[in-house]
Image 1 (cartoon, rainbow, N blue to C red):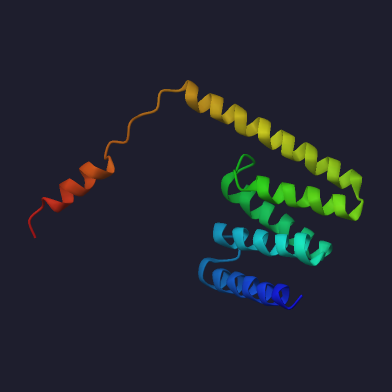
Image 2 (image 1 turned 90 degrees about the vertical axis):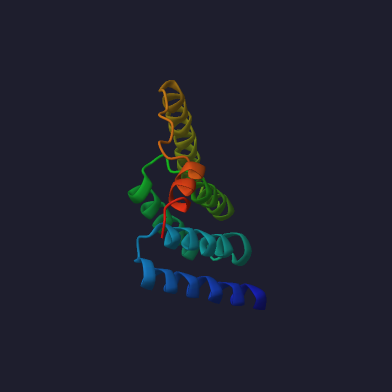
Length: 137
């Protein structure tokens, strides 16, 4: 249990630093919230604390990147496990459905992207670097 307590402290410190530097609704904060939630969920069985953090991480991810954001899968799966562990099968099923809807949204977005011609990058990295490296000082 000592290791979990140490890990918890490190996760909390990372969140505190990121919030101070980047703001409370930054992508990096959401990632750290999800990591601490997983520690609570899978290792410490602190389900209420985990649930709050997963939900906060989901809120930030959806706000920044929309409902199809790839990082949401991690949090949805965490909530499914959490509710299963608690025997809360109504919430487990709700988030299982949310995960399935998210997968459909991601698949449809991928199909739509591949259906459109993608414009090539006007400045491929190599050309960009060559341009600036060839400039006189």
